[in-house]
Image (tube, rainbow, N blue to C red; front, side, top):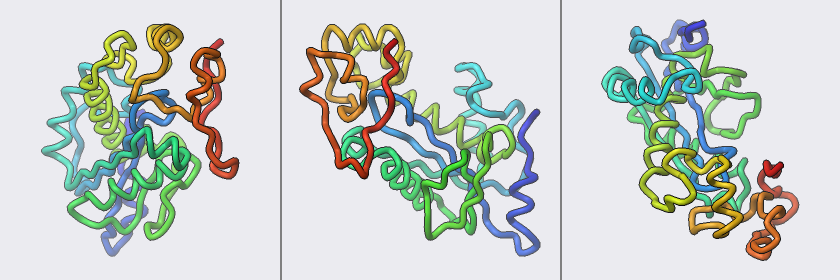
Length: 222
């Protein structure tokens, strides 16, 4: 089912409130930043074929980027680095990235549609949570495509070819896991993540945060 403007229309109401759709990428990666995109539209028809980025081929996503950039009323990006994630935890990192994205928009939204079931944005923006919002909302679908393309492009520029960042974008592919076991983490890795628990020779590099912040993510080594 293609995304629609049903949620945007409901939230904008008779006074025409400005609605932004938000999505993130990189939450589950072991290396690199988390990237958030915010998109505001004028409720005009979107580029053909727009849907959740996970349902699109890499070629189709790349082709959509210039179309989305010329169509959207406003686009804002925000990122939180791997060092911020290590220091603050993922929830706070996402909050900071989302605020940066919203503040980068050329217009200030009155309300935000956030993909997912957890509000990591908080005040001052009213937030409408929408599970699978990237499949339901046109503005969230656009944000999902733009966020993924931006982060993937960045991860392809940082080198570390043996880790395969150009292909896996910092997620735990077999190539990435093998390079970690052999060479250890790079300067781009999140050192608070629990994958280090499964690498005895590199375990001493792990960063331990305050328990209230959390330890990052569960291990994906089998």
